[in-house]
Length: 302
Image (cartoon, rainbow, N blue to C red; front, top):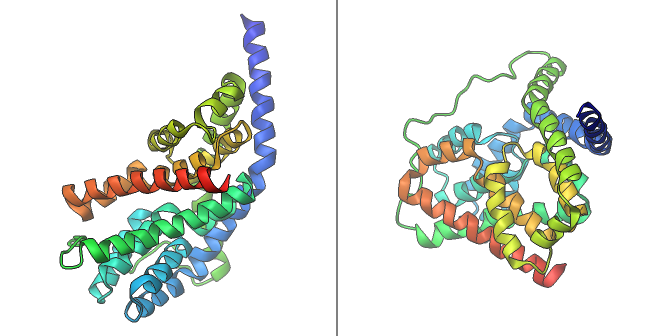
Protein backbone atom coordinates (compact mmCIF):
# COMPACT_ATOMS: atom_id res chain seq x y z
CA UNK A 1 0.00 0.00 0.00
CA UNK A 2 2.79 2.44 0.86
CA UNK A 3 4.48 1.70 -2.46
CA UNK A 4 1.24 2.50 -4.33
CA UNK A 5 0.76 5.75 -2.45
CA UNK A 6 4.38 6.71 -3.06
CA UNK A 7 4.05 5.98 -6.76
CA UNK A 8 0.85 7.99 -7.08
CA UNK A 9 2.38 10.89 -5.18
CA UNK A 10 5.29 10.92 -7.63
CA UNK A 11 2.92 10.94 -10.60
CA UNK A 12 0.83 13.76 -9.15
CA UNK A 13 3.92 15.77 -8.30
CA UNK A 14 5.17 15.33 -11.86
CA UNK A 15 1.90 16.50 -13.43
CA UNK A 16 1.53 19.39 -10.97
CA UNK A 17 5.12 20.54 -11.50
CA UNK A 18 4.68 20.37 -15.27
CA UNK A 19 1.51 22.46 -15.13
CA UNK A 20 3.09 24.94 -12.72
CA UNK A 21 6.08 25.57 -14.95
CA UNK A 22 3.88 25.95 -18.04
CA UNK A 23 1.44 28.53 -16.70
CA UNK A 24 3.19 30.17 -13.73
CA UNK A 25 4.37 33.23 -15.63
CA UNK A 26 0.94 33.79 -17.21
CA UNK A 27 -0.45 33.95 -13.66
CA UNK A 28 2.29 36.31 -12.42
CA UNK A 29 2.03 38.65 -15.41
CA UNK A 30 -1.75 38.61 -15.10
CA UNK A 31 -1.54 39.71 -11.46
CA UNK A 32 0.93 42.46 -12.32
CA UNK A 33 -1.29 43.75 -15.13
CA UNK A 34 -4.38 43.58 -12.93
CA UNK A 35 -2.70 45.57 -10.17
CA UNK A 36 -1.34 48.16 -12.61
CA UNK A 37 -4.81 48.73 -14.05
CA UNK A 38 -6.42 48.80 -10.62
CA UNK A 39 -3.99 51.34 -9.17
CA UNK A 40 -3.27 53.60 -12.14
CA UNK A 41 -6.15 53.24 -14.63
CA UNK A 42 -9.32 52.30 -12.72
CA UNK A 43 -10.49 55.86 -12.03
CA UNK A 44 -9.82 56.90 -15.61
CA UNK A 45 -11.83 53.95 -16.95
CA UNK A 46 -14.78 54.77 -14.74
CA UNK A 47 -14.72 58.48 -15.55
CA UNK A 48 -14.60 57.62 -19.24
CA UNK A 49 -17.56 55.32 -18.72
CA UNK A 50 -19.58 58.15 -17.17
CA UNK A 51 -18.69 60.56 -19.97
CA UNK A 52 -19.38 58.17 -22.83
CA UNK A 53 -22.47 56.70 -21.19
CA UNK A 54 -24.15 60.10 -21.36
CA UNK A 55 -23.43 60.57 -25.06
CA UNK A 56 -23.43 57.13 -26.71
CA UNK A 57 -26.54 55.05 -27.36
CA UNK A 58 -27.50 52.00 -29.36
CA UNK A 59 -25.00 49.41 -30.65
CA UNK A 60 -22.07 51.81 -30.41
CA UNK A 61 -22.86 52.55 -26.79
CA UNK A 62 -23.29 48.87 -25.90
CA UNK A 63 -19.99 48.02 -27.59
CA UNK A 64 -18.12 50.77 -25.77
CA UNK A 65 -19.72 49.82 -22.46
CA UNK A 66 -18.77 46.17 -22.94
CA UNK A 67 -15.17 47.10 -23.76
CA UNK A 68 -14.97 49.31 -20.68
CA UNK A 69 -16.41 46.51 -18.56
CA UNK A 70 -13.68 44.16 -19.77
CA UNK A 71 -11.06 46.81 -19.00
CA UNK A 72 -12.39 47.36 -15.47
CA UNK A 73 -10.42 45.40 -12.84
CA UNK A 74 -13.21 45.29 -10.24
CA UNK A 75 -14.94 42.17 -8.98
CA UNK A 76 -18.74 42.01 -8.96
CA UNK A 77 -19.06 43.39 -5.43
CA UNK A 78 -17.00 46.37 -6.57
CA UNK A 79 -18.81 46.74 -9.90
CA UNK A 80 -22.32 47.01 -8.44
CA UNK A 81 -21.61 50.14 -6.30
CA UNK A 82 -19.86 51.70 -9.29
CA UNK A 83 -22.90 50.97 -11.49
CA UNK A 84 -25.14 52.41 -8.77
CA UNK A 85 -23.10 55.59 -8.99
CA UNK A 86 -23.33 55.55 -12.79
CA UNK A 87 -27.12 55.17 -12.53
CA UNK A 88 -27.36 58.16 -10.20
CA UNK A 89 -25.40 60.18 -12.75
CA UNK A 90 -27.99 59.41 -15.44
CA UNK A 91 -26.38 56.53 -17.33
CA UNK A 92 -29.04 54.42 -19.05
CA UNK A 93 -29.68 50.85 -18.01
CA UNK A 94 -28.77 49.28 -21.35
CA UNK A 95 -25.30 50.87 -21.10
CA UNK A 96 -25.01 49.69 -17.48
CA UNK A 97 -26.13 46.17 -18.42
CA UNK A 98 -23.47 45.86 -21.12
CA UNK A 99 -20.79 47.19 -18.77
CA UNK A 100 -21.82 44.93 -15.89
CA UNK A 101 -22.17 41.75 -17.97
CA UNK A 102 -18.75 41.99 -19.58
CA UNK A 103 -17.20 43.01 -16.25
CA UNK A 104 -18.54 39.79 -14.72
CA UNK A 105 -17.02 37.65 -17.46
CA UNK A 106 -13.56 39.13 -17.99
CA UNK A 107 -10.92 41.56 -16.73
CA UNK A 108 -7.38 42.53 -17.79
CA UNK A 109 -5.77 40.04 -15.42
CA UNK A 110 -7.83 37.12 -16.69
CA UNK A 111 -7.15 38.07 -20.31
CA UNK A 112 -3.42 37.68 -19.83
CA UNK A 113 -3.83 34.52 -17.76
CA UNK A 114 -6.11 33.01 -20.43
CA UNK A 115 -3.27 33.32 -22.95
CA UNK A 116 -2.05 30.03 -21.46
CA UNK A 117 -5.00 28.37 -23.24
CA UNK A 118 -3.63 29.27 -26.66
CA UNK A 119 -4.33 32.04 -29.14
CA UNK A 120 -7.60 30.65 -30.50
CA UNK A 121 -9.17 30.11 -27.08
CA UNK A 122 -8.00 33.55 -25.90
CA UNK A 123 -9.47 35.35 -28.92
CA UNK A 124 -12.75 33.45 -28.63
CA UNK A 125 -13.00 34.23 -24.93
CA UNK A 126 -12.53 37.96 -25.50
CA UNK A 127 -14.97 38.06 -28.43
CA UNK A 128 -17.59 35.97 -26.62
CA UNK A 129 -17.45 38.20 -23.54
CA UNK A 130 -17.63 41.33 -25.68
CA UNK A 131 -20.64 40.02 -27.61
CA UNK A 132 -22.32 38.87 -24.40
CA UNK A 133 -22.09 42.40 -23.04
CA UNK A 134 -23.46 43.86 -26.28
CA UNK A 135 -26.33 41.35 -26.30
CA UNK A 136 -27.14 42.28 -22.70
CA UNK A 137 -27.38 45.95 -23.61
CA UNK A 138 -29.57 45.17 -26.62
CA UNK A 139 -31.97 43.01 -24.59
CA UNK A 140 -32.34 45.66 -21.91
CA UNK A 141 -32.95 48.30 -24.56
CA UNK A 142 -35.62 46.40 -26.48
CA UNK A 143 -37.22 44.20 -23.79
CA UNK A 144 -37.07 46.51 -20.78
CA UNK A 145 -37.13 49.88 -22.46
CA UNK A 146 -39.97 51.26 -20.35
CA UNK A 147 -39.27 49.26 -17.20
CA UNK A 148 -36.59 49.39 -14.54
CA UNK A 149 -34.36 46.32 -14.59
CA UNK A 150 -31.88 47.11 -11.80
CA UNK A 151 -32.58 48.10 -8.22
CA UNK A 152 -29.55 49.89 -6.80
CA UNK A 153 -31.28 51.06 -3.64
CA UNK A 154 -28.86 50.80 -0.74
CA UNK A 155 -25.78 50.74 -2.93
CA UNK A 156 -23.47 53.71 -2.99
CA UNK A 157 -19.99 54.12 -4.41
CA UNK A 158 -17.48 53.99 -1.60
CA UNK A 159 -14.93 56.76 -1.69
CA UNK A 160 -12.58 54.87 0.58
CA UNK A 161 -10.44 52.16 -0.87
CA UNK A 162 -7.44 50.01 -0.29
CA UNK A 163 -5.19 51.94 -2.67
CA UNK A 164 -4.78 55.12 -0.64
CA UNK A 165 -1.04 55.29 0.07
CA UNK A 166 0.49 58.52 -1.30
CA UNK A 167 3.42 56.63 -2.83
CA UNK A 168 2.20 55.12 -6.14
CA UNK A 169 4.82 52.36 -6.11
CA UNK A 170 3.75 51.25 -2.64
CA UNK A 171 0.11 51.40 -3.69
CA UNK A 172 0.98 49.04 -6.51
CA UNK A 173 2.88 46.66 -4.21
CA UNK A 174 0.03 46.59 -1.68
CA UNK A 175 -2.47 45.86 -4.43
CA UNK A 176 -0.24 43.15 -5.86
CA UNK A 177 0.03 41.58 -2.42
CA UNK A 178 -3.77 41.48 -2.06
CA UNK A 179 -4.00 40.03 -5.56
CA UNK A 180 -1.54 37.30 -4.64
CA UNK A 181 -3.43 36.51 -1.45
CA UNK A 182 -6.76 36.35 -3.27
CA UNK A 183 -5.69 34.29 -6.29
CA UNK A 184 -2.78 32.23 -4.94
CA UNK A 185 -4.84 29.52 -3.17
CA UNK A 186 -7.09 29.09 -6.21
CA UNK A 187 -4.07 28.92 -8.51
CA UNK A 188 -2.65 26.09 -6.37
CA UNK A 189 -6.05 24.38 -6.24
CA UNK A 190 -6.31 24.58 -10.03
CA UNK A 191 -2.87 23.01 -10.44
CA UNK A 192 -3.79 20.16 -8.07
CA UNK A 193 -7.16 19.55 -9.74
CA UNK A 194 -5.51 19.54 -13.15
CA UNK A 195 -2.93 16.99 -11.96
CA UNK A 196 -5.71 14.76 -10.62
CA UNK A 197 -7.57 14.95 -13.93
CA UNK A 198 -4.42 14.16 -15.89
CA UNK A 199 -3.65 11.16 -13.76
CA UNK A 200 -7.08 9.62 -13.28
CA UNK A 201 -9.35 10.83 -16.12
CA UNK A 202 -8.60 9.24 -19.53
CA UNK A 203 -8.02 11.72 -22.34
CA UNK A 204 -10.45 9.77 -24.54
CA UNK A 205 -13.24 10.45 -22.05
CA UNK A 206 -12.75 14.20 -22.32
CA UNK A 207 -12.77 14.00 -26.11
CA UNK A 208 -15.88 11.85 -26.11
CA UNK A 209 -17.74 14.14 -23.74
CA UNK A 210 -16.64 17.57 -24.96
CA UNK A 211 -15.49 16.94 -28.53
CA UNK A 212 -16.70 19.09 -31.46
CA UNK A 213 -19.13 16.38 -32.65
CA UNK A 214 -20.74 16.01 -29.22
CA UNK A 215 -23.43 18.68 -29.07
CA UNK A 216 -24.48 17.36 -25.67
CA UNK A 217 -20.96 18.29 -24.59
CA UNK A 218 -21.90 21.97 -24.92
CA UNK A 219 -24.67 21.60 -22.37
CA UNK A 220 -22.42 19.49 -20.17
CA UNK A 221 -19.58 22.05 -20.33
CA UNK A 222 -21.97 24.91 -19.57
CA UNK A 223 -23.43 22.96 -16.65
CA UNK A 224 -20.05 21.84 -15.26
CA UNK A 225 -18.94 25.46 -15.31
CA UNK A 226 -21.43 26.26 -12.55
CA UNK A 227 -19.97 24.16 -9.68
CA UNK A 228 -16.33 24.11 -10.82
CA UNK A 229 -15.85 27.83 -11.44
CA UNK A 230 -14.80 29.52 -8.21
CA UNK A 231 -11.93 31.67 -9.45
CA UNK A 232 -11.06 32.42 -13.06
CA UNK A 233 -7.39 31.64 -12.59
CA UNK A 234 -8.12 28.35 -10.87
CA UNK A 235 -9.89 26.93 -13.93
CA UNK A 236 -7.15 27.74 -16.46
CA UNK A 237 -4.95 24.67 -15.75
CA UNK A 238 -7.95 22.35 -15.99
CA UNK A 239 -9.24 23.93 -19.20
CA UNK A 240 -5.77 23.75 -20.69
CA UNK A 241 -5.69 19.99 -20.09
CA UNK A 242 -9.20 19.48 -21.40
CA UNK A 243 -8.41 21.34 -24.62
CA UNK A 244 -5.28 19.25 -25.08
CA UNK A 245 -7.35 16.09 -24.52
CA UNK A 246 -9.92 16.92 -27.19
CA UNK A 247 -12.37 19.40 -25.69
CA UNK A 248 -13.85 21.55 -28.45
CA UNK A 249 -13.32 25.29 -28.42
CA UNK A 250 -17.08 25.71 -28.46
CA UNK A 251 -17.46 23.70 -25.25
CA UNK A 252 -14.55 25.58 -23.66
CA UNK A 253 -16.14 28.92 -24.57
CA UNK A 254 -19.49 27.82 -23.11
CA UNK A 255 -17.65 26.88 -19.89
CA UNK A 256 -15.88 30.25 -19.81
CA UNK A 257 -19.20 32.10 -20.09
CA UNK A 258 -21.38 30.20 -17.63
CA UNK A 259 -18.56 29.77 -15.10
CA UNK A 260 -17.96 33.42 -14.12
CA UNK A 261 -21.57 34.41 -14.85
CA UNK A 262 -22.87 31.87 -12.31
CA UNK A 263 -20.03 32.04 -9.79
CA UNK A 264 -21.67 31.85 -6.39
CA UNK A 265 -20.30 35.18 -5.15
CA UNK A 266 -21.47 36.93 -8.32
CA UNK A 267 -24.93 35.38 -8.05
CA UNK A 268 -25.30 36.58 -4.48
CA UNK A 269 -24.57 40.16 -5.50
CA UNK A 270 -26.73 40.04 -8.61
CA UNK A 271 -29.72 38.59 -6.78
CA UNK A 272 -29.78 41.73 -4.63
CA UNK A 273 -29.95 44.18 -7.53
CA UNK A 274 -32.12 42.12 -9.89
CA UNK A 275 -34.83 40.57 -7.78
CA UNK A 276 -36.21 37.06 -8.34
CA UNK A 277 -37.89 37.58 -11.73
CA UNK A 278 -35.06 39.45 -13.39
CA UNK A 279 -32.53 37.11 -11.79
CA UNK A 280 -34.23 34.14 -13.51
CA UNK A 281 -34.15 36.09 -16.78
CA UNK A 282 -30.43 36.65 -16.30
CA UNK A 283 -29.71 32.94 -15.74
CA UNK A 284 -31.75 31.95 -18.80
CA UNK A 285 -29.93 34.51 -20.94
CA UNK A 286 -26.50 33.29 -19.80
CA UNK A 287 -27.34 29.65 -20.52
CA UNK A 288 -28.84 30.34 -23.96
CA UNK A 289 -26.02 32.67 -24.97
CA UNK A 290 -23.31 30.22 -23.90
CA UNK A 291 -24.93 27.28 -25.71
CA UNK A 292 -25.58 29.30 -28.87
CA UNK A 293 -22.06 30.72 -28.94
CA UNK A 294 -20.51 27.29 -28.38
CA UNK A 295 -22.64 25.71 -31.10
CA UNK A 296 -21.71 28.42 -33.62
CA UNK A 297 -18.02 28.03 -32.85
CA UNK A 298 -18.15 24.24 -33.28
CA UNK A 299 -20.29 24.40 -36.42
CA UNK A 300 -18.64 27.17 -38.40
CA UNK A 301 -15.19 27.82 -37.00
CA UNK A 302 -13.59 24.66 -35.64
